[in-house]
Length: 163
Image 1 (cartoon, one colour):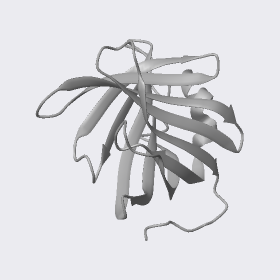
Image 2 (cartoon, one colour):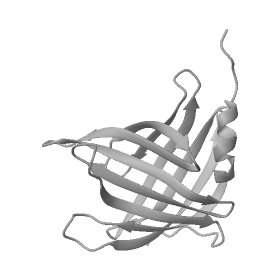
Image 3 (cartoon, one colour):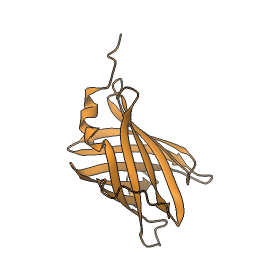
Image 4 (cartoon, one colour):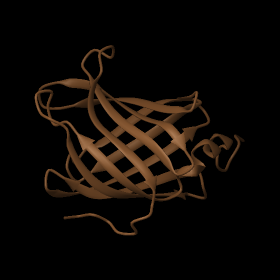
């Protein structure tokens, strides 16, 4: 029988558990300027500690933005897996990747009605009370274009911004 319970690799992301204030920047198109928005995120281990769940609430383009994600270490493939869905894109995104040199990076394919492209999410500059996150897109998997970036700081506001 395979090993059960939370994989030991989850200790690398245990610092995420709790509440975080988020300053998010979004670049809707290559020609547009970065738009800054605020939000709150809560991370908590679920499924007996085997998976980290993220709930995000904020504002995007003047509308409430809510998302849910799950982060896990697949002990069979030895890869990190991330699943994300939100009320704006209304899709389920699936990513897989590695945690190397203090940076967690996962990549997955996305589709629209006209194209398929790759998305790369990265958690980096990780400290006890702060980390950075970014989302890049690529048509060829070689050249990456920034789409979103965020700075997470340990929750101090105690309120969710949904204006």
